[in-house]
Amino acid sequence: MPKSIAIFGGSFNPPGKHHAAIALRLAEMFDEVRVIPCGPRPDKPVTGSVPPVYRAALADIVFGGLPKVVVDLSDFEQETFTRNHELQARFEREGEVWHVVGADLLEGGARGESPIQQTWARGAELWQTANFAVLRRPGYELDARDLPPHAREVDLIVEGASTVIRERLSSGKSVTEMLHSRALAYIERYGLYRAPIPGNWARGTLEGAKFFLQADAAIPKVRELSVPLVSRHVPASDADFISVVGGDGAMLRSIREHWRARLPFFGINAGHMGFLLNGPEQVSAGAFPPCDVIFRQLPMLFLEFEDEAGQTRTAHGFNDAWLERATSQSAWLEITVNNVPRIPKLVSDGALVATAAGSTAYARSMGASPLLADTPAWLLVGSNVLEPAHWRSALLSPDTTVEIRSLEPRNRPVQAFVDGLSMGRVVALRARLSRAAAVELVFCASHDMAEKIAAIQFGA
Image (cartoon, rainbow, N blue to C red; front, side, top):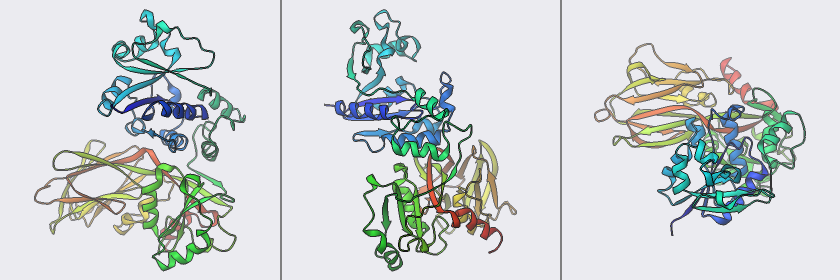
């Protein structure tokens, strides 16, 4: 039997406990549930009321840990709204597709007048050929004649509406019974659905919070700092934040493994520079976790790598991504920004893109000035540039897309890296700030990341 896949799409703006209950009910009936938060919709301007990176985090928080549920953030990343007939074509290669719809969308189906038949793209065709999982709310009477030819009914117990949640949030009323506790904490932290422009940092506390510990006990300094913490850590599924003991490399590895858990990361420096970490003095008796902290939500990079066969792979990076020469010969690269060729031929050891948070790392060693973590910009930097003679770096706006393409992939091959992880040989790298991926780093208020960068800028 083919795998049955329930396609559960919606605005989820924000996702409430009722959405999670629906996903769990669907997981009892189908082999897999794909939750797909929609991108911008002209018919629903409210989908743009909160930037997609926040909506993506909320979707991961609410649905991410549910059995047999997969959260698909592709609409956010591509800034689009994927229609149901397109979802049918995408997922039917994987199994038997079932479209999850509310019973209200079937009203008038017997006469060919249902919203699905009248307003969906290729709705009349889907009505006859596709499978539908129909959500029936308590007390809602559905005429059996209005059901499409291939339908299964799903009775619901929990009711709710994102509209009501937004209204209560905007008016300052309690929504505790309607939202997942972590989702509510995230919404309150960044002022979502209350302020016109959400914040990207907030003061708060970790006092009493449970943590999942990541530490390499084979490293003596890490082992020493971890001793007071080992007995207190909990499994990641029960944690309120992730504590990383090590250097910036350890933090990058932890981010790569766990960013979709949408837990804040609190780093403890057992290395050298530790720009992404807090000082080791935080692990003193009774001082961990600290009570007065700053949460910073920092963007990640969305990256596409093209190989010689024309195949494309995607990845996310937190600090940086770069191309560098794979042989003794210099790389010849073309730099295109927002589809405009800016440097027809860059002769160098390579080129790098970096987030503001990553600007203190490899980008800084190439000569670029580090940016404050919350700077609404990112960097493009050349490595040992020979031509153009005086070009070194460029500051990019948040909505910029960059392509770095090898002009001589056979004779002057290049290899790619993301946060130090090799991606092998490629012919091109396309990069932009992600619309869905972000990471929360936590710093002690007295030793915030901004202070570290200020010290660099002023030579301290």
